[in-house]
Length: 628
Image (cartoon, rainbow, N blue to C red):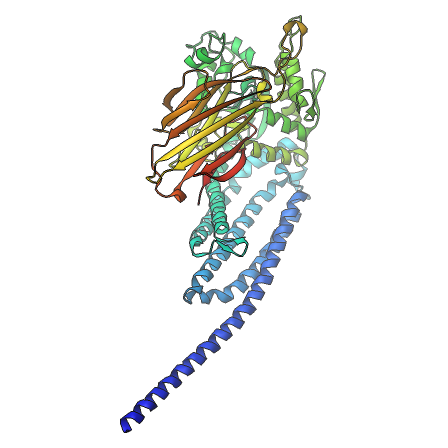
């Protein structure tokens, strides 16, 4: 009996202890819950202030007033500091099982934001002295009172002192990326209610990684910029104009060229001429490339105007140079910039209508071609047949380029240079401007940020469609091009790809009767087609080519080459099937890099994987598709 009483007493004591522990736990959880709710309200309120301030700061950028932007950034900095202080109130909870992992992710996001805030402040501090050169108003400084030439020179000669901040900015961007990388999207549910969660976190991480990588890649070019602008030694550059209405591998038919010098930031335009003038100065010509004999009707000489044969811009410029060195008009140069008609149109939009040789050029749409008036007027001046010899018929384009260059340099930087520089950066990203610099380090810096028109290498899947119009009038003005990319990943990891390329020309054929003297711009397009895919891919079938399909390796890719014609008011289609040289065991590991052809407006693309549409977009820039 005594033993039984002892056991009962011990059991009661144990239950009492458990009850007390449970009570303490309930009280602790209750207090923690109340505390968490209070902290959540504080964090939520301060977080909303940060978001509101960030939005107003974004709006302040539209004012193009650097003082307003600076004031908003200071306000954002202060609000973020309050948010960060409130957020620290729950950091201790990262040691709590299960919930702690989410608190750790939250902390990582906040600390990444702090590092990016520090990077932004350094960046703003760096650009403020030169604000008006990139389109911001800036008052009350001696720098803003100087002439345009003096402002450029001051910026170029002092920029290297500011660029030391680039390394400091890079440190903060790198720390931010390290914080972001610790966040595990897989611990979150796919959806909460109607809100996608895991995919959104993955998307934000990918976007941040892309931004951070872009900054790292751009850093060498930023540091090289003063030298490119002639800070140490005068630089000479050639500008090539590519007419994308007659599409060629690097963006268009080489129509005109200009030469300019930069010395300590001061730009001097030397000459601007028709490309035919340059061709006439070349007496010794190399052997005609096989592809010109094969696809370029009635052309049996190698002209410099046809030298951009490779889709890789650097390779084409080396071929250009091999001819240029035989010219009696050659000069030593440091680099080549290629621009197409979109750059011309965008420049006119900023600078306004411009008169050359008694003709006014505008960016407005001309109904006669449903294209910008400047394009139609240039074609009308250059290509319309007349019953007399028109001297220097293509020289008007060179004159227009020269006048626009002089016009841009003569205007106040704060008035026009902001929009011009913004359009230039956009056009470089979209490959309407290509850059080739002879200095190897400078060229590597250009290519790192994808401004060099390189055929890129990748570990995953890859495709680049390259079209060439040899003597098909200016029919690329009228032809729409769509691409459907289909990937079939088999159970054994084998990957079969199908590309469907559809070309449509909804406009009627121009009246090309020479005796009538009408403008012949829309005609049958003879399209030399090349598809670049991962090296070692095996062709299964190629439908739609009028000539024998060729397969070969080039630029570390396998190439499928064909030929088709697109008639006015007609449609042409090519269907290419092939297998990849590697297997993909997990569908989520599949990625596809699609490279845009320079000079194209942005082909409509649909990307399907295993029968499901994964992406639809206009290819205005190179695009990396990741399934995860």
